Image (cartoon, rainbow, N blue to C red):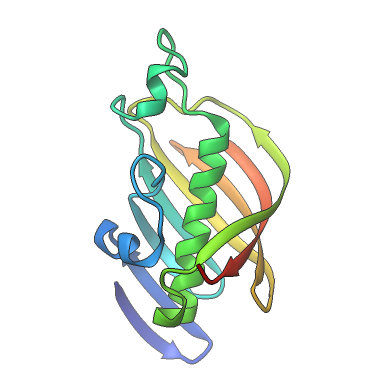
Length: 158
């Protein structure tokens, strides 16, 4: 992770690659839904990247003649991006902890996500109290909203 500090309240991590993501969160294939996290402002926001490939296992059944990424996995990808933001904010003390959904509200699916799409997962912290964080998220493809949601999660030890 590349990071620089301008002052104590403004820390930006420019990028988290897949090797680092694998150290930070417990998700693994086939449930790992984020390839990179970019444009991260610690304790505030981040953008995750998911390169959607026809090789994804869910396309075998969703749907064989018209492959569409399941909406619940798009929301999961937003949540995993938020998880990387939380772990980055807290540092190594939070690595390996589990993040559980507490609520998902206002979910809207605007367009299908298909093989070949580059899914940009924009997450913004709304609030955090102790181990509970609330986010707004937008999944974008080619500058257009594919899905959006507000979600809360709890960070817990394994």
